[in-house]
Image: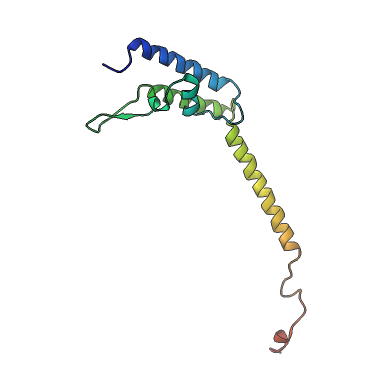
Length: 131
């Protein structure tokens, strides 16, 4: 027999599914992510319930809510592929990468502006010695 009753497990699964729907539909605060940690926090359960477990003999067994974590990941990926939702952190990272690219181009053009090539500079004594 498990540590929780079947009725408690069903209640927890319903709570997780409701939190999953809210997390996938509503806008997120700026500092949040759409991940298992946020799902667990919204549902009021520990994150470890979504992870696989090990028996005493070392064999693997699924976590009590692992199937819900897999469902959440599938739904999230489908919504992201359709463009229905955008991960705010991924969008921010994309903006930062674009900004870095622009800054690198600006720095390269600024640095190359004042440079001279060997043909541009006046000949020195060492250049004349080979004549």
